Image (tube, rainbow, N blue to C red):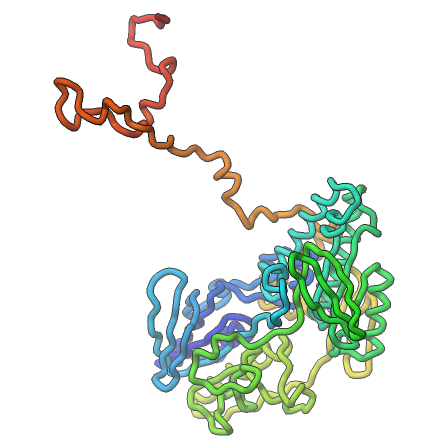
Length: 490
């Protein structure tokens, strides 16, 4: 029975394995999926997780729960030798091993792309993982609690200032969702006024959200301004050392903003693990594939090797892609994975493959409770209806009914009960409380000088122990009284 190895368990990897289970006949192939995480993250929900609208665990899909016949391996693929059809699997604990395969699917996804700007690596946080989104939520709540106890001043202002770098869909969505979240939060903190909170978005280009029309992007800018949020266009982050953001505008002017929360959303890049493979890469570090999603080397098909999603340079046959390639987003990753699964099964059965082609359905974004935008071609929708379309689309796109119900349950619960505003920031150090009160052994007791040699008449080695024992640590008053005796003080 041939073995199919799926490298990566994100959008593309999870959907590939999921659909292979659907299309393969019993005994037709063995599927193995390897990913360092035990779940797939539904990334369009990360801004809502950061804003407290969705429970973090509900925005992820468990591999083992939903992949019934796939062998799931929670580990990293650190190298691929396709010439010998082996992959090196490196677990968090234990020794690496070589996994052989007959067909391989590369779906390792993407990671945040940063630039060598001073302070960014030390101070900023990304928005690619569920852990990052949950940490952003907790950080805002914790900072509000701290600021409420402080008088007006630089330290208080720093705690109540949020800076987002990147004006694409992810940046605008998290920026607007957090603005909505903080506005709602003010009712629970009478010590903090709306004017005390500051939101700044930094975008190097002259516009935001290139996926929508210029008119729609202008509407978003106006809406954000009315909600007290500032967007700095044609501006770059020059430094973030110590949380001090130096913003350099096109005219070379410098503006300084101090913030305790800097969120980086300025682009992604293919997972660097692909450099440990013998597959061909294009200049942006993605694996080259042809339209049917088979890996190619300068037009020559590499047998039994496939790739899709953010890690692959997939030709956009509609002609609408940047540089002729599909843009790295969830809409393409999911559909590519579904087509790849069909093509792989067809190849096993000796049938023809089908090229991937997908006309863009449009773009939809949530900008906080009750506000959204939708763009499809020249048609645009803004406000409440667009927000409803955003939730409707992504609610249906969430994999499995089990996850759909959990997410919709969060939305319904928040509608009637409001967002949960309890911070769990201390989960980053969950043992702190236990360690603070845990009893520890007594320190070593210095041996008396005369104890260095055995006492007269005492055999060698019979001297008392050099360390206090639990029994010796008990006070005299706590010693038990023999039966029939009364306690007395000498």
